[in-house]
Image (cartoon, rainbow, N blue to C red; front, top):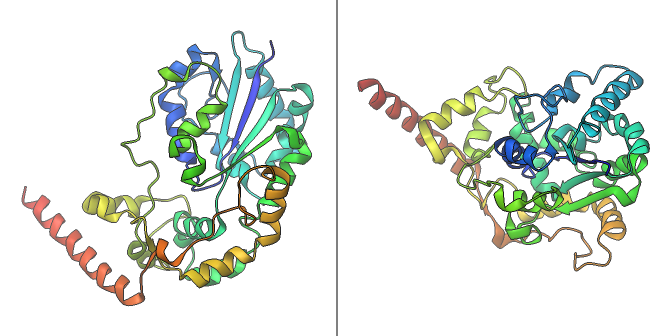
Length: 329
């Protein structure tokens, strides 16, 4: 029996970190089922981080043929290792529109029939806000200038999907909508487990831990243009605030700096792309014509600039007070 290769092209802020946390925590149980999650060098030895972001990131400047050849050799070795039934590769940058990582898999896709890519797609207004917060606010200064620079590109799911179709063919592309009511048990990890071979009952999915949390809008507004970060991957200042504020630093579920009209305007920019995805992947389902359920004004509590300033003052006062209390101890 040939092995299966499952590529999780994890779009950012679609539960990718939760899935990768699950893979890392269950690596031994997965291995006993013949399911291999390779390490950061794309090899079978520990330690396993559960993701392969840096494998692709560190090779992004290499000529495509060299990178493709190395990746092919690495994955072939994994797929043909004795006892291996499935290999899982997970990386957020595999779901990006601005690189050619998908083509690194083209020879593997020809050599092995059982190759699939899993992608969770998020509605674009939420995607842009999450991307701004997780990465771009650290090096940028203004949310709307950044949105204007990437609107229509970032989150164009047709472009991402067509890239993988060119490598694997449509029949090996699996799309899931990142909406709670469309995920198994309302949980992205449980949903992803549908694509993992073996006995799922032995896997541990710890839902009590917030993996890669989003931070509240007062913090995001505070850091924009403040020079608190070395680069887009630096989280030290976020962790500093989280240390003193605990859960109060995390985003509240209904909190939004976008009005409903702004959200609908962003989504409208992707109407053609979303329509294409629905037609080719969800036509026979109960998925709405817009692909994603449209937001409603009642879904959000829109925060004003005045709200943010008041919360920022209170937040910083609390940080100073917590530092004072802990210093006395």
